[in-house]
Image (cartoon, rainbow, N blue to C red; front, side, top):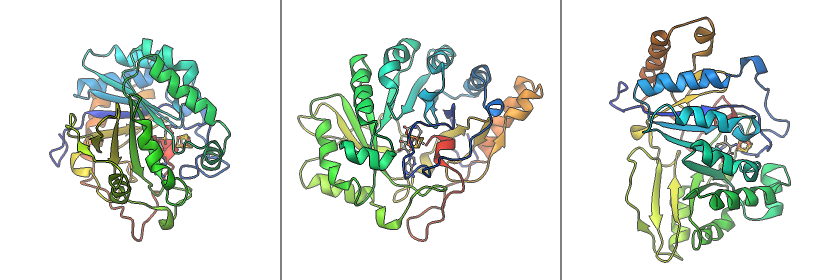
Amino acid sequence: MDKYGREINYLRISVTDRCNLRCTYCMPPEGIPLIDHQDILRYEEITRIAKLAYQLGFRKFRITGGEPLVRKGVPNLIKSISEIGDDIDLSLTTNAILLARYAEELKKSGLQRINISLDTLNKAKFKQISRFDLFDDVINGIKSAIDVGFNPVKINVVVIKTVNDDEILDFVQLTKDKPIHVRFIELMPFYKSKWDIENFISVEDIRSRIESHHHLIEANKTDPSSPANDYLIEGHQGQIGFIAPLSKKFCDACNRLRLTADGRLLPCLMGNIEIDLKTPMRDGAGDDILKSIIQSAIQKKPKGHDLCKEGIEKVNRAMSRVGG
Ligand code: SAM
Ligand code: SF4
């Protein structure tokens, strides 16, 4: 428990700060200054931290980046983490550029769930948003994920007014015949990303646009700490959901801690507190000391973040360093 009575049992692990895209809302065109290779945690180090977190009660683990699949050997890490305990929930967030190549191996390694980030169904617009002409690779990645049996495949859509808000209903349509869950996410202001209040659209607006065409049926919330509110549509195989980090922040139910690729624990995605775990680990700290550092990060979790869409201050950290 943290000091506000929240059970912290979800570790999001960024395995790299590198990425094969440059999404405008995430990075500047030139990318961000990269962490030195020797400062990136090795897979054995990540697995050790995940084991210690498990001993402290963590059960959900998500691998993210940067783009996790640009780092070699991610399926090996998935396998090591999945073997920590039978009751682990292990997932991955990816832009899917390399997913067709890895989907089967990831599944075999013990990956249970997959979230794919895709903000447009239009090839030209994909290039505009991500700055790379790789739309077809993402579509092939999504097909592979479905073919190898990930069910559902979740697609995260960051909705940007005047850029892709005209595609909201097209994304809803995707859920009709396929086991795809589409989640619409509010745009957040991050360091050096392109963010403008003019581009912000609230989940409430997105929902009302959908509701003028579809009757939404609230889905049972299986995970009370999930930030998404999910809905069913009659006759649709998949679901849709909404994540509102700004307009309806979900800090009261937040159960997360984040680990950066260079071994820092972040109590809050939006805050500036970072706790170095790599240095003591490389200096030979034993398991008990490392566990006490993880516990201290839990105790430093703030009650909530202060971001709001008016007068917004940008978070002084790149999203690609922390993985969302
Ligand atoms: N590269 C992987 C991907 O894109 O799925 C994993 C890392 S990425 C930082 C994780 C998630 O953060 C993605 O779904 C992305 O859309 C989201 N994200 C990045 N910048 C954002 C922003 N400014 N506002 C909202 N979501 C953002
Ligand atoms: Fe890369 Fe993901 Fe950021 Fe896009 S959102 S630039 S894919 S890390």
